[in-house]
Image (cartoon, rainbow, N blue to C red; front, side, top):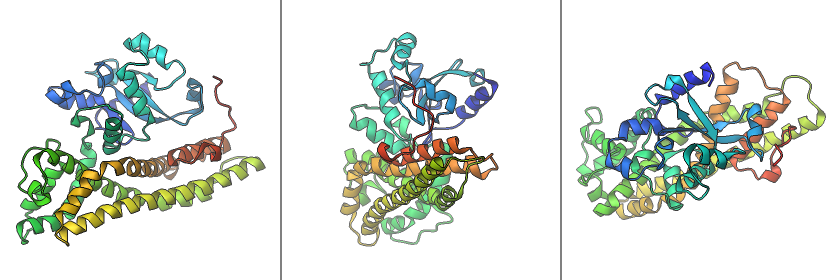
Length: 378
């Protein structure tokens, strides 16, 4: 790896998992001594189970690694020395042209092996949002320990105050009012229970209020945490949507632009803005369904309705996670690439960026922008 990539790897090591990074190395450091990590690992192979797995936007010189054209790939980085990530690492892309041969040579894995299948499942995910990932893996028969789906420390700090404000009314309902939100003991306790990575058997605040049986407790609280996370993520992400849609409509590539390319760029602009707004509407409707169920609990005093909503919630995670993940990817990339004084791209790069956005938003392939560069032959 180059020096720059080594530095990047060192910085990644310090982070928890995020929508773009599944940091199995960090998870191993934090949970490697626990029974759940040992009994239900993400991967049976020890090296893969300590890898850094990244949703990576492909550079032009990386497109040749794939037989079929794509813009975002799943990059698996294996630290050379897990005790010193500054040394660097080796990497491969899931689905690269020699993917199965690479797995056989380096890990002794066949196409049919479970570790191979799990890599391919992760590759199909648009992001590593913990709730989307957990539900998708479980639906496909991959049972993985809960420690792999915890909210990262950075996000946890940001969401804590949000959750406190959300649960204050429920705490008032549970203990009969009179909560001092500044001294905050009951609110802080409720928040701690919801966001805890080690859910126990304490049902005094949640189990009894929601009328959850002990075996439903972990699932119900996990789902509630999921919706609170998505609601917080939605509020954080929506602030950048207007900047992106205005930027997409107005940005012009540097240099001379062929008339046909300019027409395709304009078509892509409209598709992107249309789909971003549709994604925002979809996410808003799903979060509104949660808000109605929560209001039924707090205002209407109907805990069964909220409980039933939570226990049925996983089927909404995939759709909600996909929509918010796509919006977050686009807004964060736009901020990184264009807001901080980067050079305006030429027409070919702008077409690639727009095509990546359309892919993230789920625009059908028949409608997507195609770059002037051909796909690598199969």
